[in-house]
Length: 318
Ligand code: CP
Image (cartoon, rainbow, N blue to C red; front, side, top):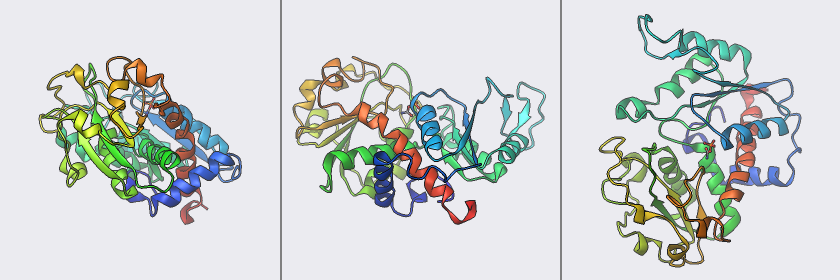
């Protein structure tokens, strides 16, 4: 693997899941792979899980890590080509990313959608420019449209729960007080399709996702009907794609609680976290055996370790 931006960068996701599960059993089996190499992690947005799990994974492989909170700890970056930089931006990405590439062997980038301009967000300018100007293998720590390390973790967790059985998954929209990007939902769909799951989406009307991710996946606008017989319930909020970034309505009745989980086939609840308790997910499901969210967060380490290992073992990195 030379980069990790989407599911399409993985030759075989089931082999990657197998590799992650081997690392889960034997975390230090490959602790020389990253010896004398450095992973640089650049965060344009906040993080708990991605930041810590990726560092832990890197250290298990013997990699050094350097982290920067871009914009607050480093200079405010300019991304526009030909910009006359007389305003608030101090350093152009052409120099900024090139310098990162001098210090780091692999670069990880988190940059969320700004939800102002759909074409700009969906062009993935920030990720692509950092990859291009750093000239280093670059991994997404959640970009404007996708969160592949989260999705790989989700697939690892589904494999642990379901074994080889084909899962019946429901991706359900859940309420949230703020407008959130579509990245986690987009990415989850993209990975679920390649995994080979039977998947249905449920959300209030107006929250239809981009055809790039959701085409051919059935939508059931009645949440309770959608949940009937589900093995896996993946709950997540997202703002509107078509009326870009809008919170069309808060629809608090879309909360996932124990009563709704009882409609499922003894279903397992997954959520990427963080979650707003009793707004998005109720205490009576988060604190129940149906919730796999902590296992899921724990698996972030093994997902990151499998991806970093694949890059370190690729021909170009030796
Ligand atoms: N799920 C996830 O990406 O968590 P963080 O935002 O805390 O990294």
